[in-house]
Figure (cartoon, rainbow, N blue to C red):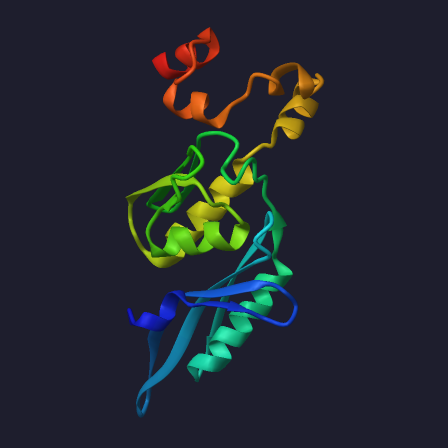
Length: 194
């Protein structure tokens, strides 16, 4: 059911952004005929690096959305946001869906479809390039996005994994040079030749 309400943005009294990504009618065949239920896929985020995803099922749409919102609040995770974009190129995969997230220069905006864009907006990203490859099933796409976000590393996390200080390589880090190779340094040029 693709209607205008599926991607609305609501701020609840707890300050979280709640967006309904998908509403679907499902049927169970019983002795007397078919019994219909509704499923809802909801994303919740604070717009500042925390985001969660929930799936709810009920006999009525509002109840399914409420259940999904509660589950999304319980499953919120922290994601790294660097200058409004993702820190590095990353792929996420779930089932037959693959999602590519790529850092973008300031002013680019979130270049994404409705499902991916809703999650990135709730997480607080303002400049990201995305592409969905393979299946565009709503459930698989949003789980692939969450997989991609889980794979992201902030510069501090990367430095801790290497056992180095983040300041050693953060000084010459620029999102623009990483994406477009605009500066003349060899690091960006070698990153673009790979």
